[in-house]
Length: 134
Image (cartoon, rainbow, N blue to C red; front, side, top):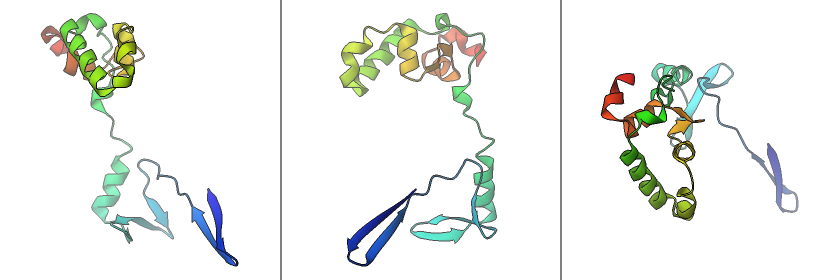
């Protein structure tokens, strides 16, 4: 996206909005891959190039769904404590939080995904006997 700004007669400034680079794809110009070093734009070292390329293959292990896990595998007292902490962090929603059932709360807190139990949910709120699912 480009904006044109005129500050005085015959003086114009073009402002470019450059989107973030796609994950795993270094930014190149004339076959040279570039990155920032403070305020400067410099060529990427091999190590930096490989780090960017590996972004594409890295996944968030903790966000993974645990297929056989259910809400029963989570500790009720841990969920209660999580609600209390959520209300402190999101005080504008404090009244609303009490009306949510457990799955709605966990989804909104991004601990579960569409009602499915994630590794994060088991790590943070799981019962001791649910540990084997990890």
